[in-house]
Structures are given as C-alpha cells and as structure tokens.
Amino acid sequence: AARVLAVRAELTAGVPALLAGGDEVTDAVLRQRAPIALLGGCWLDTVSQPATQPAVAVNRLFGQYFRPQGEGNPRQSVHHLRRRALEQSGVYLPDIDAVDFLTKAQARPLTALHALWYLSLSRLSASFLPETVGVQYAYHALGIDEALLGLPARLDEATLRAGLAEYLDLTGDSPTGVADRQRLLAAIDLTVTLEREHVALLHEVARWQASLPLEAKVAAIIERHLPFAGRQHRDVRVAGQRLADVFADPDVDLAAFVRTFRDSRQLKRIHGDDGRFLKAIKFGGPMFGIFDEREAAVFAQWADRAAAGDLPDVEHSPHRCGDAAADRWSAALAGSAPADVRFARAAPADDRELFHRLVNIEAYPNTLPIAYRTALANLDSAELLFTVGGGGRYTDASFFDYTPGALAERVDRIYWDKLVNPYRPLTEIPDREEVIFVQKTFALGSLIDGTWAHRIGNLGRYRRPSDGMLASIYADEMGRGDLRKNHITLIHQVLRSMDIDVPHIREVAFLDQGELPDHLYGFSIHQLCLALFPDSFYQEILGYNLGIEMFGLGEMRMHEMQKLRHHGFDPIYEEAHLSIDNISAGHARQSADIIIAYLDEVARTVGEPVVQAQWRRIWRGYASFAYFVEHTLVRA
Image 1 (cartoon, rainbow, N blue to C red):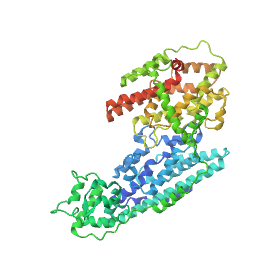
Image 2: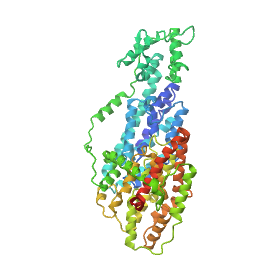
Image 3: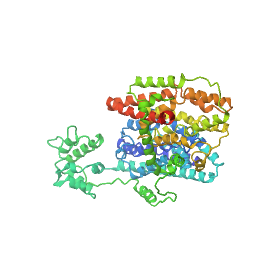
Image 4: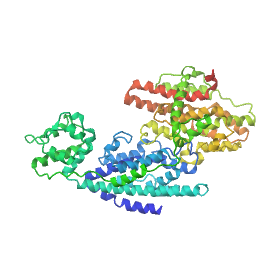
C-alpha cells in the first residue's frame, strides 16, 4: 500500500501541468483519458455471481461496487459524474458502448489496450478474483481520474486498504493462499505499471498537441476524418486530383495534400468572404456537421493565414504517441498461448452438468448458445399460460393489455386472491422428514437467489431508472455488501439447521450431491439462462423479477415458517423474504414500479405503439416464472 501511495504522489503531482497547456491541450488530454475514466470500476460488474456468492471478499467488493454505482441511482454513479465533469471541461463524447466512442475520444492504441485489459477482467472476475481485488485497490488508491477531473474519491484509501488486508488474511486459510497472494501482488504491480504508462502517454499527448503548428493541426484533422471520406466526393478535384482517389490511397502523403489544398481555389477567400470549403462546412453547406466547432475554427484560422501568405511549408507530424508501448503489449498478446484454454463443442450430458456449466460460465463460454436457446424455448412454452394462467395456485399469468392501472390491479389481485386471503394457519404440521424434503425442493433455487438480475447495470447498461431499481433489488438480495444479510448466506444457515450439507454450487463435487432432487433443476437452469443475456432478455427479466418477488409473500411462506419453527429449524430465509418482499414498499411493489418506469420511458422515447410489444415480452418473463411454479396447471 505504501508503494502505491508513493506512486500516487508522483503521478498526481504532474496533473496540474497536464491541464495548464490551454483548451486544446486539456481537451486532448481528457479525451485520451476518457475511455479509462468512464470504465473505471467495470471489473466489479460481475464479481457477484452464482459462482462467487456468498463470500466475505466478494461481498466486500460488491459493497465497493454498489456505492459508486449511486446505490441504484444511475445519475449518481461514478460513470455519470465523470461524464458530467468531462462535459463541464468541454469534452462531449458518445455513450461508451457507441460504435464511434473510441474515434470521438481520439483514443491511441495504447489507451485501447489498457481499456481492453479492464474490460476483459470484468468478464472473468470469478476466474481472476485475486487479480480483481488487486486492481480494485491499486486503481482507486492511485486516484488518477479524480485528480484529472477534480472530483472527490467515492472510495477512500482506508476503506480500500481494509478490504485488501481482509482478503490477504483470508488467503492464509486457503490451500491456494500463496498463489493467490502472488496473483494479487502481480495485479497491483500491473495496475501501477499501466497507470504510470498511461499518465506518461497523457504527458506525451499534451506535448504533441502543444507543439503542433497550424499546418500540422490541419493535417491531424484531415487524418482523423480520412477513414470516413471517399466516394461521396465523386468528381470533386483539388488541383486536378480527384479527392476520392487521394483518400483511397493507403499511403497518402498528407503533407503534400495539405500543401496542395492550401493553395487551391477551394480554400481561397472570394472578395474577402469565405471560400468554397469554409462555406461548405458551415450551416447550410454540404459538409456541415462533419467537423466540430474547434476543427472548423482551425480551418478558418488556416484560411486567414493562407490569404495573408505567412504560412511556412507543411511538415506533417503524425500522431504516434504511445505507439512504442502499444506495440510491445500487442506483441506480447499475440505471442501468448494460455495452456488451459481448449476448444470443444458444448454437450452437457444432463441437467446437473448444464447447471454446473451455467454457474461456471466463465470456464464454459461454449455453453452460451445452449443457454440462449434454452431460455427462448422456456419463454415460448410459457405462453401457454397466457390463456390458462388464471387457474394458477400462486400466480396469474393470463395475458392482459398493459396500462399502469391494469398492472397495479393484477398485482393487487394476485396478492390478495392467490397469496394472502387463502392463508389459514396449519392445524396439522407435517413430520420432520416431510418438512425437510419440501425445503430441499426449494433449496436449489434459493442457492442462486438474485441470479436473474446479477448482470443488470453493467458498463454501458446503467442509464435507465429501471436499471438502477433492478440493481437495487439485486443488491438487497446480496445484503448490500454485508455477508450476514446475504440471502444465500441465509439459505445455507437454514440448511445447516437441518443437517443438510452440500458443496458450493460452483464445485465439481456438487455434480454428485445427493440431497437436492434432480427433477427441479429446470427452474434454476431457466433463471441462469435468462441472467446471462441481460440485453437480449431485459424485458423478460423485468417480468420474471415480478413473479419471483411476489412469490415471497403470503400463504406458502407463512406455512413454511410455521413448519420450520415447529421442528426447531431456522426460519430466517422465509422471514427475510416475507419482510423485504412486502407489497407495500418492498420488492414486490418495487418490481411493479420497475415495469411501469421502463414502459413509461419506452412510451416517451419511441412511442405508445411499441409499449404493447415490449409489454408482451415482459409478461412472457412473468409467465416463465409461473411455468415452473404451477406444475399442476402446466401438466393439465
């Protein structure tokens, strides 16, 4: 930690110089840093997942993730606060997942490679947990982005250090502890190296930008837009040369072109007024909008200087900042061949093996197509309940046209007619073995509690109010960083009270567990499959969320609590859900509010006709939950 803080002092001491070179230099520096700044923290996007929960270190990391995410408010997340700070400095960029984001950020290859490291870690944080812990500490402790953007740190170094120390203590009891500590320290070293390297790149970019003569600035602008120029110029010529031919040449001599263009009739002023080119890039001209205001101002200044005849010969200074380091990293990546990666067709033998692969999806990416097809098939099958779902014991998946009032009415009717009014205290309590068996039928689904929403709110997908609301529900399921309140901790606590001992669901040993029945794996498999596609099945996840959160209420929970207490078993899991899922303001009510908020945004952005199509998909998600709950109805 002391070494990291020493590097922080060294690197942040140079930040004022980066921002002291004028608007153009500051713009270039902040754009170059933006890809790193706007994805900062993404390595924790999926650290909380079925393969890692519950665990002390993971819950600590999740707490450090959820707070900077704005605790369910996307507009208060670090990503959005940093974007606002960039915009206040005049740097306006597309969304980070936009196809032209890196182009607009003018990202050098080295910046892209650094960003790819953090993004790659975000997809494999269970496999690289020691590295994730190390990166989390080192990146935030260095605090480069806060120093550049003038923002307060959302995670103080003492909190970060406590998490680091806690993890190191835990490795002392692990059979892989020595290797894990080595991996963690290597990740810290790598992060320090990368941040030092990137700050050096920023200084190089600042010097390059500050030293650019006017002619070179023009050449840089043309070079930046060159990939998008071409056929639309058709027969437009400059000094007799077709622009389409000039720009199609991969070895175009930019200095020669700028020199030719400077002396061409297109740039010359006409009777003291703008020439053809300047008129073309202004409002009403055929090239309006291609160049931003700063670029247009450079062209105008260039035209003035050309008219005055005081421009020197053109010397193009290509932008090569950071390329030597980028070449080294690229060569290292190209030469790497991990020994533990093999390619094979996914062919799980049964539901147990499929469940194992889905939980450990980082190790089985070839199972993703199977997961997608499985989710889609279940959703299609669930539409059966659109017509007969009213006969459900705990649900009503019969379809209805959406309005906010209609949804609220259906939720209330399910709550009262299906879940609450039928409740009567049990007059006879089943024997101990039957109570244990029923709990076993629920246990597999409980061991993946919250999974359906664990990928909501990832980088580039945390903008809508519904994203934040659903992420908050998931945070509650995971105890908001407190392991004692983590719902998966609670179900393990219940199972221990019944002397039921099963391996962690990520372990190979779970494939052979003999406690939980095989015929109910389908419910958990469906939830895992949906969760792996938070974009493709976003609407369905909203509906599924409503179904599962309402299931925590009423008669069934009350009866289970009564049976568990009678036999001296721990009822904490049932009690927690009956409380937190309450219909007044808990997860059940929030789940309906999420759907209303999402469809309201759909109506306001793309129009009311789209709402009903989106609603059908949402209700398919609800029906897919009911499909696995209402066994008698489905079989009939």
